[in-house]
Length: 242
Image 1 (cartoon, helix red, strand yellow):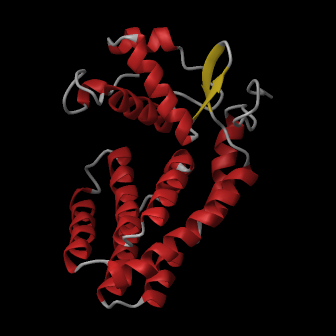
Image 2 (cartoon, rainbow, N blue to C red):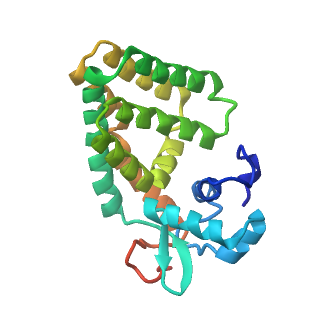
């Protein structure tokens, strides 16, 4: 469970907790840390060759994102939100994404639209040989950029916060339907609508791209059920095993 060596900048600098959080986040997505698993602060710090202070700060970052649950006098655990929680979040996310695209049609500069176009081209060119997790992170950057292109800080911040909470679910659903042509075609439809400055068309393209998330969540829950872990969310004391 160590991808920190692959992170630019190594083990030093003020952003060390963020780097550790990124490494742990990827471990959660890869299934190296499963829902309900305890994250041992001391063991993980020793494994990564860092002190416990930045490890503790990294865990707090993940707790703020909803990926980890902090427990009093006990090791934190990987969160496993209920289907209802995820479904509620997906419903809000879909509408935030559509609203972001609508506003960005009016507010985004041509250069900003060029940026997501360039990103989609990189995804197209490198899809087959790239690590699926790297490709997922590029995909999420595409959506985060659209939210920022709205130039509405409140909307963009809400989108970021919700995307963080859905990070694992989005990854698992993306793996269920991992297809280069689908991703590139649907991203291109969004970009073309934005270039045309057509808010309704952009929102429709977002819906086509993300409208399946609710159904795909059922597959995510089957994945977690196979691990033998029931829902465990902030406020719960312990994970529940079947």
